[in-house]
Image (cartoon, rainbow, N blue to C red; front, side):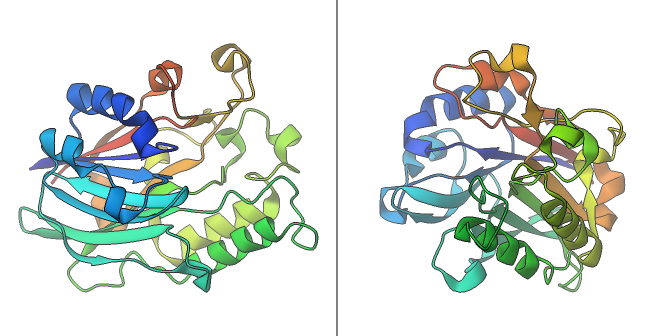
Length: 267
């Protein structure tokens, strides 16, 4: 029995619903996880998603900032929203779904970007990011009995050398500083998470999901980073068929600076 999960930082859902529809109508993921929806719960545009077959939607949003949502063709139960760092930001949501005899907990994260200066003494946003990652270290893929786990989202960290266009030049740039990359790798190690995007792509190959708006020609510049991630509990690793990074979406009309990333499983 197969299923697919897409993660996408959409950078304002209401603004970019046309490209969400463009993506869904062609690629038809079973579950769509969105970040940076930037819409409060009462104004969330559920109707167009339901019209495309996503009858089961859970949201955690706020006006103008952050926001995460899960839209699914399968029933979602036991949904949970955790307030990381206790500041009231809408940055996490999770729910359980079932495929065949398997129960799966799906986490959707939007980790703080961290501002521009990688020094928490002068940049509170960077300190917030580090505290958020520290709290994530308590999240274990095997924490629920008889339940597999998938973690997706914009984690705003490119942890490996070839997750960025230039490891050397980005070591002092937020998203690839050693304190961030080591922290995220510890989240993965402590929580027994499997990096599915690197399961079929060796660590010495470049892998990007984000290209800055600042580049006049993002494709020619080639300065990407892997900020979006799909992890799972180790029992799901053998069931991963493939990962698709839809790079072409970065060139669509009024695009997000992130592109959809989809994991296909066969249980």
